[in-house]
Length: 270
Image (tube, rainbow, N blue to C red):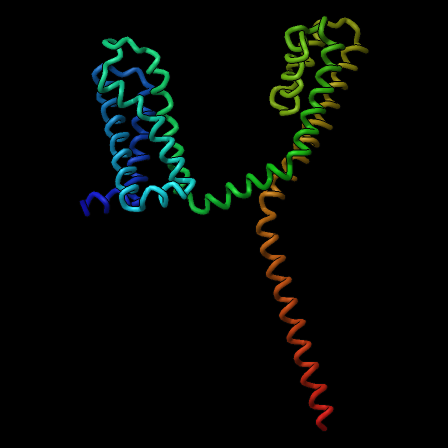
């Protein structure tokens, strides 16, 4: 029992199991023979069974309440529960019980990869920074969404008949404008519209219109969102430095006050 606890309370052992499980799940995506795939399934299910033992050992060692007081342990438990269908498919062959939908449930075993996240150094600081940045950036992200919506409605009304493939309805138009915002492959859209035009003036106007959207919304807009998000993520470090500086200033003020009081006492005594 002591050996079992020593093994499953050792983070290095758990990390090794997670990495091995990730490799097995990766290999299961290839078209191997049925025997090979079944062998990989057995290994995957065995590792899932080891995770169940790990859960039992930790519950026994830490206690139910103490174990679930940690959010990471709660996440571990959820991921283990999601991976249980892979055990069912081994214990009860799907072609016999005709529960083919369990194959879809088995796909959630991929979420076991997430267990590796908890072992990343300083991961809690990273998540805290992301949550803080999301809260700070919510207004500008919402504004960016509304801007995308307005431009997509305008573009839909202009290009709906000319290029229904990209602007046939407001939803298509919204997705098209969003692709332009992301800059990737943006030139394909104005080029497709320009091919339907005979007038040089309209072709130039269309390209200027999409270049303006790309520049002001894609390049400047996304840069602004990214700058605010990154600044919010790193603000925690700045806050710590500001607190330290404030504490140092307070100590200096107290020290200065003490020195001045000492000098006054010396002068009065003389």
